[in-house]
Amino acid sequence: AALAAGAFDDSTLEATLNNLLQTDPDPLVREAAQRSLDGGSDMKVLPTLSIMERILFLQRVPLFANLPPGELKQVAAIAYEHVFSEDDVIARQGEQGDEMYIIVDGEVRVLAELERGKTEELALRGPGEYVGEMSIISQEPRMASLRAVGDVRMLCIGQKEFEGIIRERPETSLAVIRVLIERLKEAQGRETP
Image 1 (tube, rainbow, N blue to C red):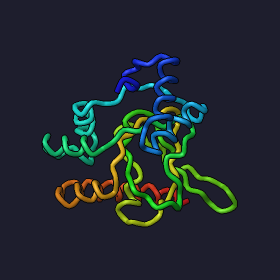
Image 2: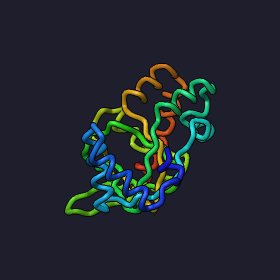
Image 3: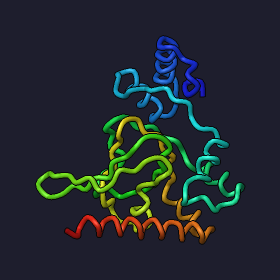
Image 4: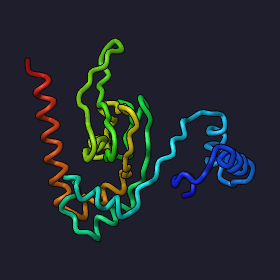
């Protein structure tokens, strides 16, 4: 929490990372601390969204706009925040998708990898839009890759959690269907000369 609030200067951050590397029982935490110390990632310090900020944001996302506040709170609680940097690959075409992403800030390129290493930009998605839902609905490999345009902050929802939302809220299923129809229309528009 102190890191997210920007409370660490460089020396304090380095000391904290060294402490985590030496003492944390979780190997993933130790690995992340080592990567950070090695300069393996740009550690941009951005404040995380509070549950209330997530609820207010999700109210403006068409997929969740009709949910009552109590259910929005549940969605906000299961969503976790992730920040990607310029040109980070968020998801790769062909991989099995296990989460969807709701863009809070920034833009995401949706890219299809074609024959002979060529890439086609299918769409550019921005704040309030979501990506990656098709793979978790169809349980098929991802049909496109997602790449960050500049810094991108997203809320991520895992497949099981998303399926639970859909089962419990039929209106959310309808919102997903509407977006899928729009995306199919976009795809057909690209195919016709």
